[in-house]
Image 1 (cartoon, rainbow, N blue to C red):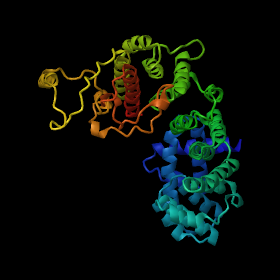
Image 2 (tube, one colour):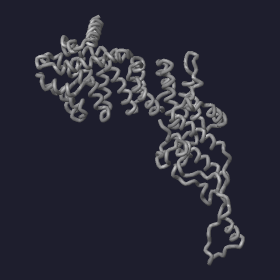
Image 3 (cartoon, helix red, strand yellow):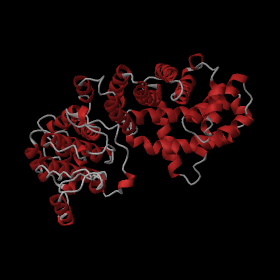
Image 4 (tube, helix red, strand yellow):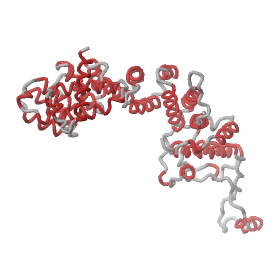
Length: 460
């Protein structure tokens, strides 16, 4: 009830401020902590999915900044107002405002140390911020301030001390459940868990985020981390667990997530995951299938492009509406069609074996050999020779010199263990590779290697 009353008063003030020529009077009657608390209430509504509150947030940020800049030393003698200043700063406030207000305030040493850490954080000095904030325990502060401090410290330590960062983000959630602080803490936890290789933590944080904050305006950042995590931790996350998490999404978001996973998995050569994600994207929900979505058709085809059903794959690729694909996906389609064409192409003719040259003084060259050598200039070039130039140059239009190193790209078939490095010379070009079976095996290996180059260099 109290929160509702505050919100109603806030809305009235905002309406009044928006329609008055001198809107400054609206915040004059409020203490800084009241404006910042109102800002937090609006932000919590936004985190829960109320995007209509975004303009209200912008107005409140403007009002809070103006009030904090004009507050004098007497205002900041109230601990609630100084805490509000720090919360405003850790919410992404104006560092100039925070620094100027701190210089006017008279408060206890710990609060001043906290203010210094916040100012360093806002001004992009993470080392100094960590040093200033290190001795301050978020759990020992009032919950509204401690939650933000835990979030900031967790973010600062994410790179060098991920385990400690996860603990701090848990504290932030404990101190401020159901708020924008918890939304941000969960979102950051997902990314840190991926970097740690912690599949259990990744799955738990993802589940909690989808349950509570799927409609947050920041959910697109979660989606990026989630897709990257599924790819990075694919050996540790079962398809059933993935399906459990996505089942909590609405059908459109679920489809988009599976399409993104299928694309990344296809590019990285994770055929099983790509096939699973493509099938789930096509399957849809509640009887609404996505079988006509060209992206689902493309990604499903990429995962089977070297299979025994290549003719079916070629037929599917030919039916895809290019006009409904992005530029990057059109490049993938071109690559897939080129690969499919290579797979069904007839075996290349083997090069003629030439005898090793022998010094004339030791072994005279027979007349028949001389005649044949004289005619070599008229022989047609060897057909079907595989160029050392990366095939992605033709597929994407990029210069071959810009093609990435694909030695670490996963192979795209069960024959992955036999794929030769891209830089290795083809045995088919050597004088000893005259056996037709050896030549066919070599050609297949090179085709698989070209597949990796095409997919690995496609835009992600």
